[in-house]
Image (cartoon, each protein chain N blue to C red):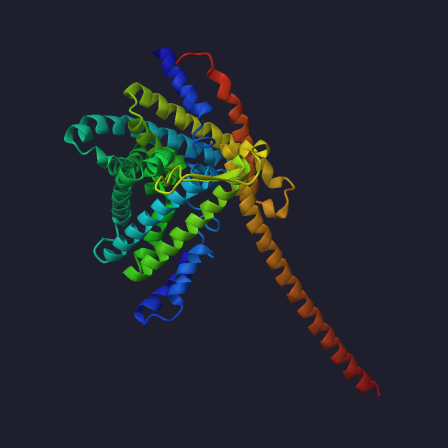
Length: 257
Length: 197
């Protein structure tokens, strides 16, 4: 999937950047190549840090920063790093940015640091970061890599926030803000009465169920679209066949006259 | 001492299972679980690497990084240790036991990006565990991973032939299975209540 895209983008690099290609490059991370929902990468933090909307937003934010920084640095160094040792080099670059982000989080957002715990360190082994470095940043310019990383990061953040939305809403019946990002005042938005919450959705089992249902919904929509397309094609074919038959019948009728 | 050690192993193996409650290593759990044999190979390779990584990373952190005052380099160090460890183990097995290499070889490179390995190494030092407890954590976690991935793959083989709704085919039904397994493992939560660790 990624390889198919490459020639197009390298072409874009050589020529003047086409209008709209930047937007396309950004939007592909959100929809057609969404790292979590389409490529099924980075599942560990998606399941572990989506108990609350705030935690998911924090995770997505840190992840996006690491992804953007490492993609841009890899892109800058792509002509210097030798082909043979590129994977270790990328891992060191990523690990360095993760360490910086970890220390910054510990200093400025200690609540976020303690909520996410070891999962901040685990951004290092998140396949998306290494995957983008390998598949995109090592072959494209700094600006394109930045847009690609931004799109992927935002797409991933939105995807895990979608999971957190269901888990927090059904699991606690409310959205609470201000517990992790303490710079905003605390407020709680009770939507479902507290006695009707299904706390299963806050447990690990709930995480698996929500993820399964989201993937199943996507598969359902895809199947439906494919079916509609197939039906349309079938109708078109039937119509053509009928036309051809009618024409043949006409010819026959003309011949018999 | 011994009781604490054994309880810590069982606790990190079953109660706080690596995949189903701590969410480490979901990628190989979903990716390499279509056949029992390959999931067994993956599981054994993970046990091997996690144990070696624990044995190397814990002393490295406590006797090298901390005295040198660069404890913040832990993540970089661990991932380098793990990556080179995976390479070395691969070379070593290839040289001395080609048959083992044949069965484990393809899973070894995948382990570098398995977050269970880094998660255990990082967790051991983040929580300030003693070396013995770190070993127990490594052993319990990795065996927990082995058990879960083998059981899960055995279920998945059956699921292949089951009549699942079209939209749930493949990954979604596997995730639902994992959810039910997680529910079952939640039942083990009360196992140690009353025992003072």
